[in-house]
Image (cartoon, rainbow, N blue to C red; front, side, top):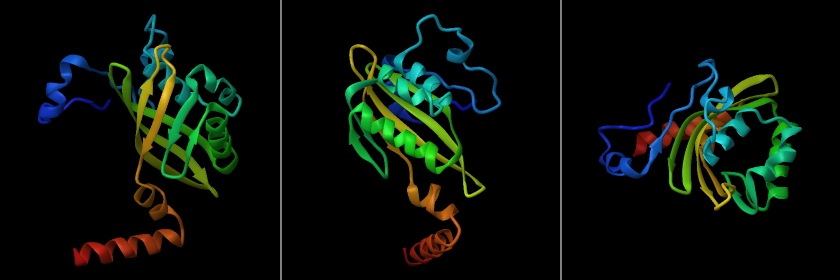
Length: 180
């Protein structure tokens, strides 16, 4: 399990009083609190983490249970508003990748906001890939997502791992780091 707090980080230490950091198990780490049903009333962030870890093409239809109708979603490739548009992003993910799945590794909550650390595992043309990132979430009074913002480095996490394009990206990175 990864630890979401750092004694060496004064910013985290000073906000500790008003926040709750709760790591979730990594793949193979056994059932987490939400999946094991150990929490009588899991937080919106934990419910969303469980939703993503169990996401299937069929469960995309229940996205509205977790997102407000006018929720905003942004990642390196998309910026949309509304649950119908968000559903299309995930439907496209299932249509264009093989065996996609999310593993939520960290959950840091503070008031009506949360940060989820995650690993997205999938295959593309038979090649297994993993993208790691963080999601910033804001919730409404009913616990539904109003803002979902994914942060991950498309160049490092995806482009460098692809045949042809990966070689070009790695060469460019080496060249830029040699001149800097």
